[in-house]
Length: 380
Image 1 (cartoon, rainbow, N blue to C red):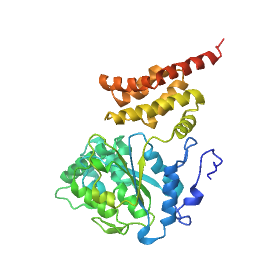
Image 2 (cartoon, rainbow, N blue to C red; image 1 turned 90 degrees about the vertical axis):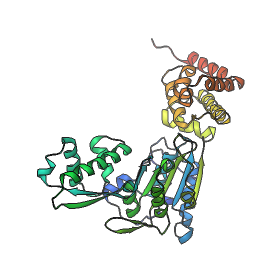
Image 3 (cartoon, rainbow, N blue to C red; image 1 turned 135 degrees about the vertical axis):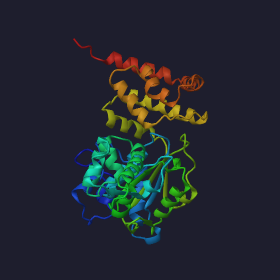
Image 4 (spheres, rainbow, N blue to C red; image 1 turned 45 degrees about the vertical axis):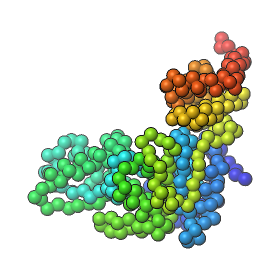
């Protein structure tokens, strides 16, 4: 049985830390995820922790590549972060995108140009290069660009390629020093962190997938321009991917074959949904939450049965609950927080509405809301 820690959050780290004697730097300690009070340990979390710990020292039977596959909002990233906390490993992630190439997997080689040539570049380019030159190598080049320019990962990767071209032009005919900036993947792989690989199904280049496949072997390696690095024994890869996500493809068979444990992520049980919503929003009206959860479950089933692409996930449930807690109309906010996130197609909306009406859920929702209003104490 799991006992809550002093912060009121379920903590199972003591039981499942994979390298308890391993020293960490202060910066690495900061990367280990800290569970918020709203986090509730799920069956999936416990099952993965038990399996990983049981097989950790069993050689070829080791479990170090995990796949979490499910709809958006089903808690995949939250679970990946929870595993970082439970295993005591620094958490880092890479978000895949369609035009990823091998430099996004490995890292980039950047010329260190002279201050005179640096001044010929744009101000933004100068500030980024200075940040790169002054970095300690702990962060990837893409991460430095994301932090310096406030860019998303895909934009930062593109900007890095443009910057490499500009620097190469400025350094023509000049003897320059080169410096290698490893990717987030390489940092995690070399140092034994927990790496979440988000949406590898969107990658178009087969060579990139082949590089990932090779790296995910338990005894795998990555060929860098400067050296060959071996997979750290503490490295854990958690692949998170959506089912039927627009722009995605079926997960590469070779990649799937390298996974030792898979979880199918769906909406949790009704009781867990309510418990998480209470913890996340502070709203405690059990009767209203019961109805909201029933509606979410029915919308999820109806969307699946009718091949409606949108998802009735936990994020929508949290925001809907929070809106109701803030005094919004439960019926009205149902559309803005849930239904319109699933679809704005009129025919599909009618299918969802008809399903709710056929089960009497909209009437029950109205009754629960009226009862709440009756019990409210009017402010003087």
